[in-house]
Length: 106
Image 1 (cartoon, helix red, strand yellow):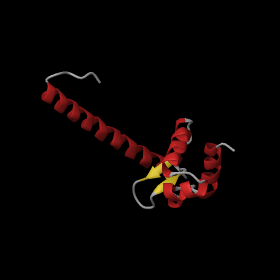
Image 2 (spheres, one colour):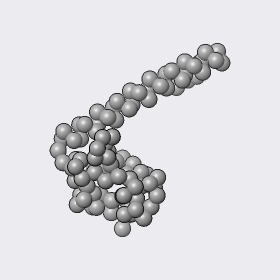
Image 3 (tube, one colour):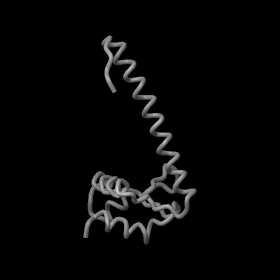
């Protein structure tokens, strides 16, 4: 069975709702792969429209949303990360331009 399908089926039974979040370490042990490989499987699932969420607060880990509020909370975390990465990117670009007196296209 495809690992992504296997993961989704497992999560539907065992990781439904934030309170049942499971860490990448536990999931990778369950699926017999590295944490890096697991994150790649999760990325593919997400890009295929599966709403696999993650929590930066206890309980930490990955889960499927039980309700819209859980989904929105995770989305807000992602949007916040995007904003911080964008600010950092602009600062690095500014520093490179100052150091080398050039303009780098983004």
